[in-house]
Length: 210
Image (cartoon, rainbow, N blue to C red; front, side, top):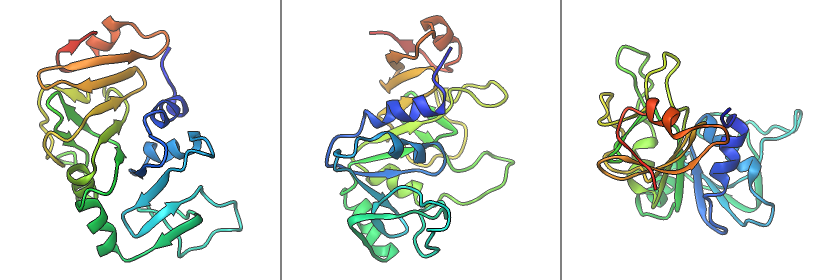
């Protein structure tokens, strides 16, 4: 057994402090907002120029002018605001985003992050991930533990092009929660039914247990 995507997102939601400003990356991280309590007071930021991003709209209520960075239609909560992209990136680069939850293709044990291109694959550009990885106060990676081919995503050193160096603090996968320790990954929590042996076998770097 391991966590499914919804359980991964719910576990990631527990990492968000009340009242914080949070940016959710494209894909799996967007599910995290569904698992926050209504009174959390969290402000979701989107790098295309939105603070106070709300849930996805119901069918028929979409506003094509309100989208997230993944070009999905969203809503705005009471008190939310829109602004130009330059202001949005100034917020990121100025250190005003408390937490960024990003996907990853590789995370190294020293916190290096690669999440924008697999050599030989389609190149989409590095986008705002470069700024978020460098400018947010804390980086949480939410990703599957291995690739579709069974290759570890948590590695000694990234061999994909880097998004940023030494930026990742914590990783949540379907197998558990791990912290970056420089010379290893440190086990924080195992998903139900997952053994330390299984986790170690699927991690491409030393694993330290507490």
